[in-house]
Length: 120
Image (cartoon, rainbow, N blue to C red; front, side, top):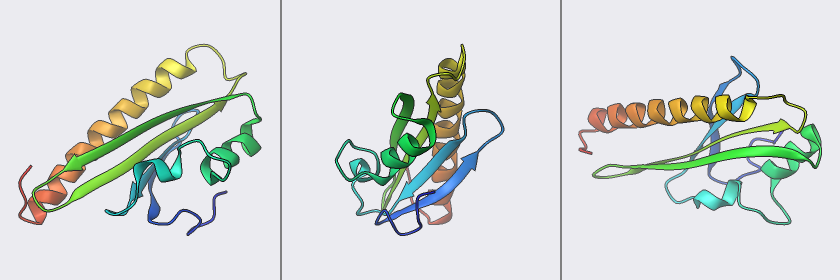
């Protein structure tokens, strides 16, 4: 697993393993770059971990979302990975689940902004 602190300014916000594959939501610190935890590079712990778990031939779905509020941004990376033998329909179902996760994140971010007295 990716060690806590291996990605500066990133924390695991939630994980949904109700279905295959699991979907992880990473919350980024306000000053963290969205690309820092998933963008292709020679030293990318997220992609390296997926390759170790699923092999070099795998699919990875990534969604980056920023919810802007009056005084702060909420930044997230939602991702899932599955092997080439995952079966038919996994990619479509994963996209649907990720879209729902992003919608929930947006609703939660709006509620958080309301708690802080900010406006969308």
